[in-house]
Amino acid sequence: RSFEAELRRVNLPYVLIGGMSFFDRKEGRDLLSYLKVIENPHDEPALLRVINTPARGIGNSSVKQLVAAATAKGGHVWDVVARQGARGIVAPGAAKSVDDFVQLIGQLRAQANKLTLGDLTSHVIEKVGYRRELERTFPDANDLAARTASLEEIINAAASYQQHSREPSLRGFLDDIALGGQDSNEDKESQLQGNAIALMTMHSAKGLEFPYVYMPGMEEGILPHKRSVEAEGDAIDEERRLCYVGVTRAQEELTLSFALTRRKWGKPRETVPSRFLYEMTGQADNARTMQGSRSAK
Picture 1 (cartoon, one colour):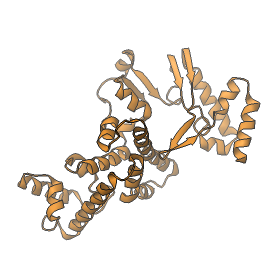
Picture 2 (spheres, rainbow, N blue to C red):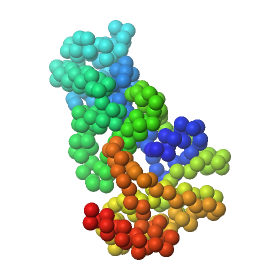
Picture 3 (cartoon, rainbow, N blue to C red):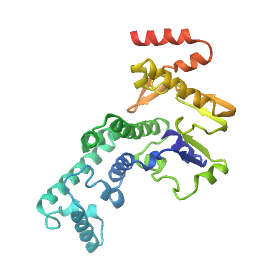
Picture 4 (cartoon, rainbow, N blue to C red):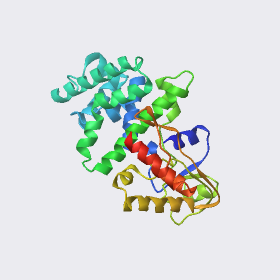
């Protein structure tokens, strides 16, 4: 997410290889749509996206009736339901759900100016029950972790924007993060030939070579992945082979980097350099000492 956002900001072309853009993921779009409604409830595409997300008993037919009522009055859906409620427009059960949704958005809007953007984003996730909905919908632990990570990235993005912006605002954050993915109709091969930056996992990079390769995130918990660190043994060996794949993709220059701190749910946390960095520089003993002291803590 951070690379996509920054490349967009400086208007550098990029191609995502072997995966879905962060900006195209459902979880990210849902959460950002909630933030857009909080900032401006007249944003009807965002409002209609989240009015029944997570499901709260407002079906498609009820949404169509709300839109028809607003059209007939020449106004916005939010104005209709906020002023007069949904009774008489949709069925009684759906009307209560709509009224509860309006109350929820009202509460979130009241909190918007009292919280930092990172805290507001985290608060929205909890208040709308989005995390519980993911846990209910995706019982597979790996699938759930990937989708939860999308929510975490939005929180991290909000906290980072708050920290680095001179005059942070919810509107400014939404403009900065720029919803909407790349042009999916444009051929990726032609983009690469035009010197677009390729973003990919090391699994996707197998068999490919590039003049310049950057491997960020050389940290314990990322490479090697935290699940492999916990498993040790063969799992670490497989991560080491994967690291070798990344290193050998470079034809001319290879850049390895790690962050001194990394945000976790919007809060900065110290990192530990990857053991593979120590091994590459002949300091494997130092890596074991570092990992042992870290475990002791």
